[in-house]
Image (cartoon, rainbow, N blue to C red):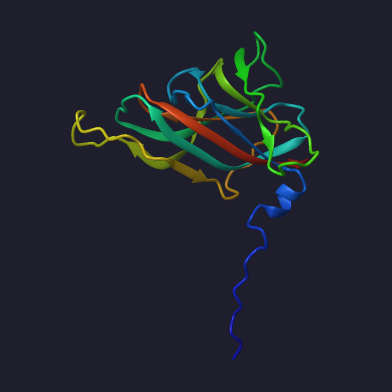
Length: 193
């Protein structure tokens, strides 16, 4: 009887994508950003695959760490907006936004270029996105509003469950306004169409 062999990918799950220059990451400033509210058209951190990019964006991981402020009872999730246009413009789905220019290629020290995706640290939308998915984590307790705990560092692995076609906008949200500031990171791959 044959015994099944254990197989481990050399270098990890994303080694080949990273080696070929297709994995990118961006992190907010150390002071952090507020979490967008799920009912608002104003937000603070988003991954945007603009129309005409020529790539599908595949989110790999989202990380969230509390750096300051007092939390409120809220559940965390993601909203998606599509079509989201090609650029920030008055009549576009994203009329205002501030791009974070510090995205890095996962192959550190390589000569691979910048990503096609845009990450925004602040934005307004012409419409609220649709609920894409929950993260499965919430801050606070249901028992009492005075028994709120601070959110530990957490993350969500997408594990291939989301592909962002061009003209798609994805952003993390909470269900309630919070005065917390969070250090946040998006890690994603870009696959040519």
